[in-house]
Length: 109
Length: 115
Image (spheres, rainbow over the protein chains, first blue to last red):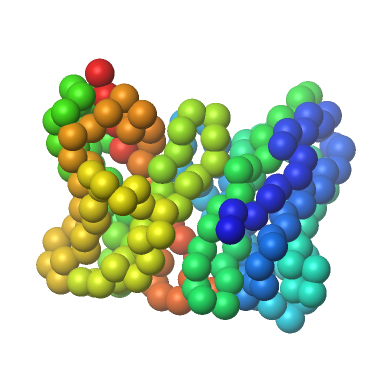
């Protein structure tokens, strides 16, 4: 039931781009993305609903392909502040919400 | 507007004791979720509650663990007869309503250490 995230970890230089993927074996109603800094609570980034929508703010955006039961998070021109662990949370048609194991992103100067 | 509050922030228990973790959701939020996180691992869903109702407890161990969200007061996650394997950070999150449309706001977590 837990969504699968890939990659598990990624290291970038400032200014580089990254893509984090999230896939589920179940039909999805919505996908949530959160970022957690070490020792802190997860913080909300965005929700995507089925309908194939895309969302974004600043240089972080995401897409949701409900047919493929996948979502991707795009980080463009990464900044040092983007470092952290990114979690996708998937909600199925029964309102069951589950989080992936996380993708650890490290941005270096 | 205060965020999600959890207490205590740190809790130390000896094996066999009981641990009670409290979560006060944000004002106006009636949905509460509990998650467990082991060091360097992801968030593992435990239970989803609305006021006075357990909606989904499929992530809760069958024994020793229980959760409630009474009409008045905070949500409580109770772990009886704790074992070393229960050591983890326990996060609660609250939302205004349906998870499809409402982001979850996380509390700062309670770090449980079982000696």
